[in-house]
Amino acid sequence: MRIQEHVKLSAIGAAAAWPWLKQDVLIPLVASIGIDVDHYLWFAVTHRTLSLRAAMRYFGQADPPQRPAAKFLHHPIVLGALLFVALRLRSRLLLLILAGLLFHVSLDFIHVTQMRTLKQSLSERAQGKCSACGKEEQALQLHTVRVSSNLLERYAPRHYVVLCPSCHEQAHSAATKTAI
Ligand SMILES: [Zn+2]
Ligand SMILES: [Zn+2]
Ligand SMILES: [Zn+2]
Image (spheres, rainbow, N blue to C red):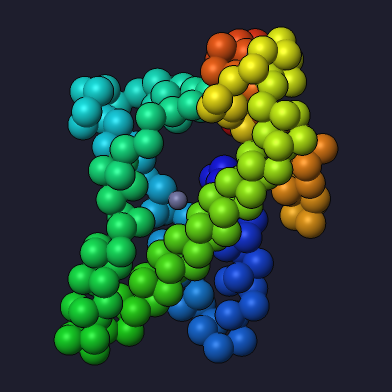
C-alpha cells in the first residue's frame, strides 16, 4: 500500500480514536506512518546510499524483489517482542506505538490479500495471456493502471491489468511516476 494511503487511513483512525486518546493519538499516528521507514533503512544499508530517490525507484519497480529483511519492523517477532516489553514495563507509550504499528500491518495485510485475489481473477479472465502483447505467460503480474482516490474503488478490477514481466517492466519505465 502506498504511503499516501497509509497517511490518509491512519489520519481517519486517529480521528476516530481522538475522543479516548486526545493528543496522545499522535503517538500511534506517527508509528503507523513511520513504520515503512524500515524499507528505506534496509535499502540504505544494502545499497550503501542515502538517496531517497534511488530507494523510491527500487521499490517502484514493476516487480521489486520481496526481501523480508526490508520490512523488519512489520515482522511478527518484532511486534511480539515489543508487546512483551510494553507489558513488562507497563508502558502506555510503547502500547500506543504498538497500536499504530498493528494498525499499519493490518492495512498492509488487507492490501496484499486484495491484490492476490485480483491477480488470480484477472489472470483467469485473461486466460493466462498478457493484456498488452497477448503472449501466454505462466506468471502474469498485476499492474495498477490507476490508484483510485476513492477507497471503495481502490480494488475495483477495472483499475488493474495482468501483464507479462517484460510488458510490466515497460509500463513502469514509461510511467515511473504513476506506476505501482
Ligand atoms: Zn508497510
Ligand atoms: Zn506482454
Ligand atoms: Zn505495475
